[in-house]
Image (tube, rainbow over all chains, first blue to last red; front, side, top):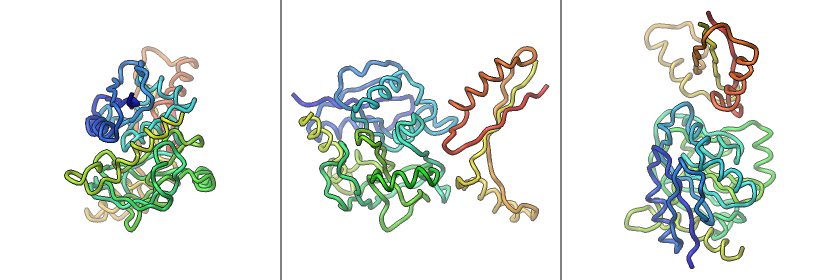
Length: 225
Length: 81
């Protein structure tokens, strides 16, 4: 039986359908999850999709963090449950303190939408195990608040523990510290990524098929559990 | 009735591109006084009567958990009549 990866829909989520489609293209079964319920419906992993949850009011991800579904996800994630936060999902993970740091307004103030080259630096997480270390990929980046910020101590910790999973290459889109595009928690089950792998799963509609590897990685890792 | 005000500012070390944009717009209008600008948020919370220490403590808790993100922001709480 295919593993079920849940995709959470918050009010204002945009990329939940694309994320669910990516799960299915990778060979899994997508399980829709709703923000207002704390029921994880026995899914094996969760994707927090991109969009503008709760209109990005207050701060991006700040209100979604208190949704009933997040209470369940936070507890599960602390016990090793796989969670991938993409764009707004990454912001929710930072607001939930499942990942350190915060995402702030892009340095140039513009909302950016471009095909972005990334270098994968950590292939030990549940979501990146199918990549080779140093692999360069191209997936879409689209956000207004994608600048990863944290204090020096946190940055040193992330770097020394190899917890930067992907970095921007050739172009600095938003002023993120150390060109960080994505990070993981110490255990490697929670990953946050600003660019959008779910929009790069087939050559017809995306700049590459590189994004699919995030989803196939997780499905393969679930087999081994 | 009193108003509890919570002012939230980005920490000094966090880049503030919005503040920088305002700072660079001022001289274009002939305002040449600003050396730098930082932009923040202000919450006005209305309550009945004078705030009790317990209410202030609750606002403090809310400011820490929701109104600000302590990773990148600081806050100040004031009471206005």
